[in-house]
Length: 371
Ligand SMILES: [Zn+2]
Image 1 (tube, protein in one colour):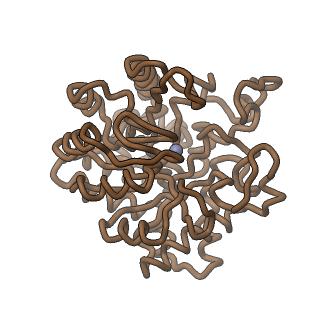
Image 2 (tube, rainbow, N blue to C red):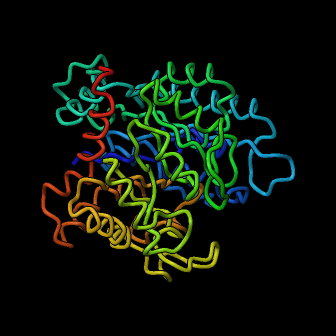
């Protein structure tokens, strides 16, 4: 079954973690033996071969670079220009992966439809790289939609236009902490003038607003000032895990009213309450794919249907096996989520919607006038 994963930080892993995602996962892990500079060294779960074996034919992949004032506790760059330059390095890596036939950028409805149909019938596809795919049907290019997690790197409206021309289609204005355009997780405050201007420009360009990571005030402000398509690429439920990173039931209701799709995040601290980083383990907390389904089910119960849930695993978001569901060995295990949903009573049509259908419907609607 086609799986859409609405949130991966592929380029961050390639450039800041120095991971060659074209290689087998065992090899990537082995290269990191003895390294301690990142929390998930030797325990990564994402590589292109694993994505292919899990049927992840389409993902939303980020550019990510935060600006921080010197002295901030958060990691980041000391000028917005440095942050912009990092996003351009990430863009260059995505391009290089396209040139290798590993990835294909999806930037409009025609490209989306091509990717979905080539996934469903890879050998008969008329895409230009048909020969190599026919020779090795497991080596299909994975579709990716470019998204920006945290907008600090957008220097001016002209840079936003340039990014759009490069294929950027979604923006989450903030990440962790205070941002230049909006306030993120663990911060507070509304968008302010520049944040609202950013949303106006995004509206004009037809971009998607990713409300993941917005603090409560910035989220409310964004819903008031943005009229275009809204998704939450990787967010869970505050009713199950109390923390400002998650959505309250009222926020979930507002998002459903805006016809948003919410991708379930697989970061274990967002799945089970009371997680202590570095101490709690997925096994000790009993976090499994079933726990992910608890969050999906909570949203479906609020909605009264399965039209607003998807997957936004974030499985390469600075954590690995030490902090993801115990039964997820690599990202290929996303393919087992539909059967876990089925055990909880979800029908075939619901499984398809959650695995890919909701995000595809969302994108086709968002890009209806941009074919
Ligand atoms: Zn995130």
